[in-house]
Image 1: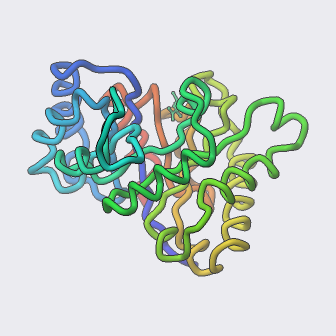
Image 2 (image 1 turned 180 degrees about the horizontal axis):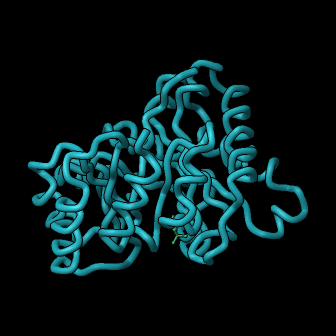
Length: 256
Ligand code: PEP
């Protein structure tokens, strides 16, 4: 069986001023220490990237991510940020197609595809989010919804591109709601995602790709979720805003 290193990312969303971000990162650096059993990624808001980047520059085991980017290299896109601008701040990862971007900013699978392409071209590692709504889960449409999100979001890519992508499975009904998919439900869905990927790409790359779970992950449920064979990490929202809680998720869930 292939050994996929777990990846835990903290999505701070629209939280933390620069001063608050610095305080959180200082605490995290102290709490996490040299732990490197998992890849750890912090995704602050754009305005705190520079401050967090400076603090993380001497810290090899914690990487920097962004929550979004624009697909164009530059130009008249008021309010937007390009991949090159992120690279300049030593950002390594970027979340693409988070359900909040899909819901509030009308991003669709085609947008996700263009942004993912631009991120890869700039050598950023995209964390591509997919997930179904509650009615889609309850009416058993989740398989076709995820299949479409993956097929359209990753259209035109081959094994080489997929190898640099991380998928985050985030059931929309579990984000910020306190509801979590059961470990069995999440595992079944991750297996389905891997199976879909194996039909569009090679079986080998589908086996290697890391699939994170996201949706109300916290200290109490992280270990059980991340002990499932196809759950390769977590994308953590609310619980990543607290240094102790986020560190506990990382250490409890990823210590062998
Ligand atoms: C997220 O923002 O990706 C997320 C999963 O949020 P929460 O952990 O708060 O549900």
